[in-house]
Length: 407
Image (cartoon, rainbow, N blue to C red; front, top):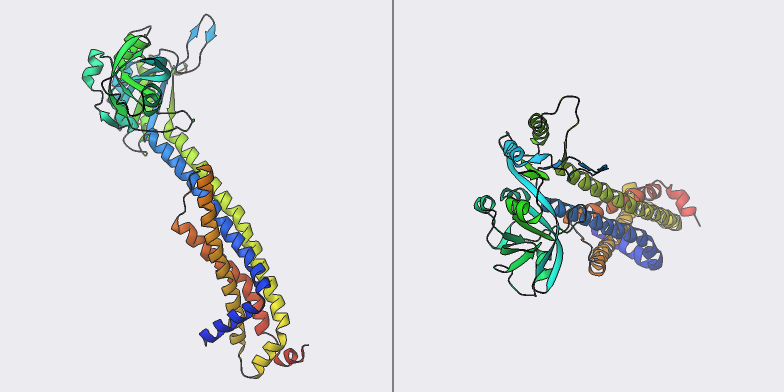
């Protein structure tokens, strides 16, 4: 019986091809727009997640406080209120897995006839561990480089592309930073941009002591501009923050009525905020596109109501020869389901194709997940069934005598 009803439904759809196509159009547009918007939204989430992963996990940055010179007050990170001893003390705290003192700035770098302005990061080997930054060729810094203030450097991808010829191996070459020669001992893996849009690969890492003595100089022995602190887990971060603040206030002999002479920034909180923003954007895009599904469902209901009116006499004849109410209900509901599912399938193809086209034209990150496709399909099919039920029920409730009299 079901196969017969499906055949009848297909025949009814074929008798009014243009009307059927226009009815499907709402579902096609609805499903296609939902798939496309979800692909764009999930692509944005993926891009942000990738950016966050390049920063490292469970990180705090402790910045030196402001400084004042000749009446001019600078912002945080430019003073010299932090010492290497502060970093050593933080490393002894519970729930702290990595601590890296950092002294960085921008300097002109020269290799042969080429020069490039890059960020010079003076730090210790723990910095690479905290940032999960791999050395892809050559070898990394070690503690002996820091103790001896050796003039060695690790270079990022952007620096390599700007200073060296294509295919040239930087390892073993000598570059000059502020007229001081440095030997490149290794190259860093690509990181891309951070959440602020800065190119993380435009970086040269040198031993902390070398940066202090040969590159930037410091007014006080052991002065640093920041300390990178990595907690053992995300759950331990609030406790680590409190203990770091308490420790530094004690070491800097700050009274209770005095403000901190340092700043502490939670990189994980900034990353979570960015991730939450993209999640909300993805949901918003999906919600906007879902309005098209609602419009498509209303279109199905309107056309099915017209079909019931046109086929009132046919319904009366079916009932007169023995068709039950549930048979009439099933017949018209199957027609609504077939229109809805066919429109869904076409919409899926167009939505996926549109997402791939956007990726090809704009290089925007697009993520087409099986779950989003299935959700869009079943929601769209459900909308079609929901709006098709009322016309089907109306057809089943017709009085056979009145239906036969209908002209």
